[in-house]
Image (cartoon, rainbow, N blue to C red):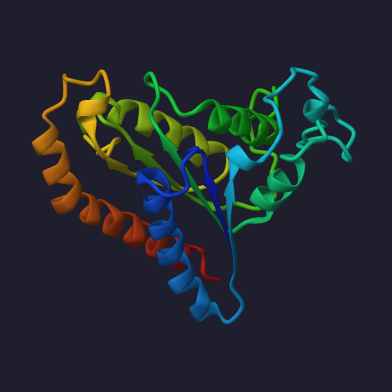
Length: 217
């Protein structure tokens, strides 16, 4: 079983990366029972790439091109791994009501080649994967639940069965007094980080286990 985790956060040591690692560990703990588990965490901020350029090469009827992104850069090998994965885990903080630019560019080149403009909108990728999303934000969860459901629904149609977990009102800074950020109830945020964030990581771990279990042959 192949487990691939995609981190769309710049910081490898904070909330999104921590939750993604928890989901990855959960998936690997189950995938290992299959006897041959392979896994990898990829940090998109380490790579040099861009989003879809609208060339439509991935829509050509030529079987060597249909469903394949024609761009060649650091993301090319990642896309091949994602298409071949049994479980794909995608983590992103929410910036201005959306995933990070790195995740957005990744999704353009991962999801868009996976569909055609045919009337039946049949997915192109031969292999169906299980997809787990991780979202972190400083806003209340109700603010972006609909957005998370929309992304999970999109990946369910193109890639395979999807679900998500969210961490809300997360702690972003160690010392808020150094920043123009007096809108936050700092004590509440720090308290949540101590009491709630471990539960969020556990929820991510359980999601990873659940998805890997569903992906077992």
